[in-house]
Every structure is written in C-alpha cells, then in structure tokens.
Image (cartoon, rainbow, N blue to C red; front, side, top):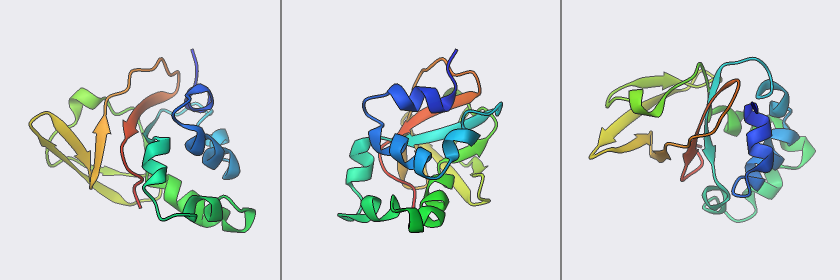
Length: 134
C-alpha cells in the first residue's frame, strides 16, 4: 500500500503539489508513519493563485514560505470525509485552526471546497481541495 507522498507522486492532477512537497522536504514527513490527513490542492487549485506566485515560492530561498503554505493542508491523524460535521474545528500541523462547514452534503474547510478522494494510503487519508488554503 502506498503512502501519501507516493500517491501524490503518481497523480497526474497533483503535479504542482508534488513539486511543492519535494521542494520543502514534506515528502519525508508524508512518507513517514503518520497518520496524516492532507487536503490536497489540485493543479487547477494552484492555477487560481496570483500569477507567478507558485513559481516564486518554489525558489529555494522561499522554502519557508512554501512550507507555511503547505502546512495549512496537512493535519495529524486520519480524518475520514464522512465523519466531518458542520462546526468541527481542525488544527493543521502549523497550529492554524480551520472550521468545517457542511451544507447540502457540500464540505468546506474554511473557504476551500473539499471532496472525498478514495486512495489506498498506508499512512493516512487524502482529500482533494479546489483551492489552496492561504
């Protein structure tokens, strides 16, 4: 069974996330035992950012800023999509609290729409996100 890093590495819709986690060494964290939950922004989500921002953040001198951005998407523990309830609060690995909203079966984490993503992952859970959590 694959870990989170391995799943990201082969997903054709997560190329920017793949580059980002390798640029920040989060690939090491997301390959470790865990469990972790990642709300994985797709390439389309990264395209919504200000033009040129992600390329700037991928420069080695900006790895701390990129790490901070990615930390907003990673949570300790395995969070099952079906267990998310309106009003739940989740704390990311960087200590930022995110509020869950559930309305008409749509789940948002802050302002980010979250979708269930079923992957066989050995060290946690991965959900897809339609925007980058900044």
